[in-house]
Each structure stands twice: as C-alpha cells, then as structure tokens.
Amino acid sequence: MIDLRTDTLTQPTAAMRDAIARAEVGDEQKREDPTVIALEERVADLLGQEDAVFVPSATMANQMALRVLSEPGDGLVAHAASHLLRSEAGGPAALAGLMVEQVPTWDGRFGAEELRALATVDGDRTQSTTRVVSVENTHSNCGGRVWTLAQTRAVLDEARAHGIRAHLDGARIMNAAVALGVPAAELAGGFDTVTICFSKGLGCPFGAALSGDGARVERARRVKQLLGGAMRQAGMMAASALYALDHHVERLVDDHRRARALAAILSEAGAPVDLAQVETNFVLIDAGARGLSSADCIGRLAEAGVLVSTTARRDVVRAVTHLDVDDDDVTRAGAAIARVLGA
Ligand SMILES: Cc1ncc(COP(=O)(O)O)c(C=O)c1O
Image (cartoon, rainbow, N blue to C red):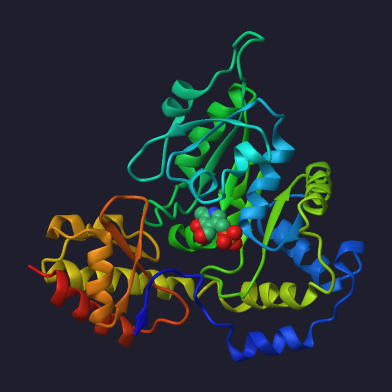
C-alpha cells in the first residue's frame, strides 16, 4: 500500500531516533531543558523573530497565538478553509472568544481588498473590532498553495494600516520557503506571531513552535501552561526537530518534485488534476469530475493500493508526497490512480 493521505504519517528515521536517544534533557516546564532552549533559539533565528516557544502541536501554537493577539469579542479574519477555523475544534471561539470573518477564496490566498472588505476597523463601541488576520502558508486545505512574498506583504501592509495584528500559520512554512527559494525569515517577517510545525514534511514524530517578540512569547508560555502544554523532558522531541532542521529541509524539493511528477502522470492519463495547483507536496484530484464521491474514490484507490484523503472541497481528494514516499512509489501510485481515474 502506498500511503499518500498526508505528510504527518512519516516514521522517524534511524538517524532521527538516534538523535532523540542522545538528547540532553531537563525539566522543560522549569525552562531547564537545554535541547528545548536550543531549539527555541534556532526557531526564533530561522523565522527572524525575537523568541519562540516549543509546544506539542501546531494546533496549540495557533490557538496560543490567537489568545495573545486578541481580547474576547475581538474579530479574526481568516480563510474559510484554514486549519485554524476548520480543524481546531472551534478554538478561536472556545479559547480566545473571537468573532470570525471567513475569506472564501479558491486557493487559500487573499489580498488587501478581501481583508478590507471583511474587517471592522473604525466601528463604534457596539461593534467587534477586527484585531487579527491569519495567513496560512502553505495552505493545506487548498492544496498546499504558496503565498509569495508580494502576496504576504500586501495583506500585512493593509493590516498594519488599520492596526490589525497578523498571525502566520506556517505549519508548512519550510515547504513555502523551499518552493519559493526565499528564506523562511523573509516569509515570516512582519507577522506578530508565526507557527512552525515539525511533524509534517519535516518528518518528526511530534512538536511545533510559536515565535514572536519576547513579551508575546512570554505571554504565550503562560497560555501554554494554562492549556496543559508545558512539558518535562521534552528535549527528546526537540532533538528530533533540531535534527529535522539540519537534515530534512533541503530534501523538501524532492517531495515537491514528486508531487509534480505524480500530477504529470495523472494529467497525461487524462485524470482530473490541475497541474497549476501543484506548488508544493499536495496533488488535488477532482473525483467529482469522474462522477465519484470522495468516499467512493478513496475506496477504489485503496483497492488499487493507494491511500488518499479528503479535502475541504466536496468530492476532491488529495495525494500528498512526503519523506516515506520515493520515486518508485510515485510511479506505481500514478499508474494505479490513472487506472481508476484516467480518461
Ligand atoms: C496548516 C496547518 N496548521 C496547523 C495544523 C495543526 O497541526 P497539528 O496536527 O500538529 O496540531 C495542521 C495540521 O495538519 C495544518 O495543516
């Protein structure tokens, strides 16, 4: 079976397990874990921010960010299919008390105009004031789409002009950086808070970080305690993240190349894919165009030996390349999917 459901499925490599086993550890909750501290410094540097805090998951990092950027009753503008709105159990409402305005674009990106149209910036005291805008780069539910520097800047400039704070859900920011050939710090620059995740394309078993300025990250550490995310000998997990930053970033180009190769095989066979959508490691397949529901398509492909998963779009499924998928897997998966969905 070739498992292309998502990039969180990767198994830690032998070398990563070795790095985990050798990690120097201490009590993270007491800020005595040297490996966690080293990772936090590395992430702050990588993302061009003052400080960073290590957390178990990108969900926690996103929700901590919203808590430190806003007050209950404030407004949040985010993409309608963003992870933060769709897959974090209602966190913006439950944990930060935010009113949400959803941007409904097709590819996960939006501009100053969409932000302007949805934001309430000079309302009276009866209104919820837009305090935060969130950008997801790459955008997972829209097929791993990349926000370019110019697109990011346009939204950040509009936000700044109206006193709106900006969060970057950069769970896959390294995919974006590698795809654009731009340092992650540039893509993260200008955001008040930035999430990065280690358990996706970077191949770790666990972990994410939230970065921002020193005062905000210190407040985020308190929210992390509140949410039960403060840990003990977490250096074992931080060691896997440090290992991944050393060894698994440059290889993301291979995942992107394989996603394009898979899409090309499918397109040549007349299967319903849009080559232009494939900017990183996600390939969207329009099962509906073949008269199939997502569930039917997933079932048929599983019988053919390939696992894919649903997306936020009705009857569109996705195939995701990752560390545990090689060129041969792509060739075989392409042939199997083409047999089921080809013209
Ligand atoms: C864009 C994005 N943000 C956040 C998350 C949450 O990550 P985690 O599962 O580590 O909480 C995901 C997970 O898939 C994601 O795709």
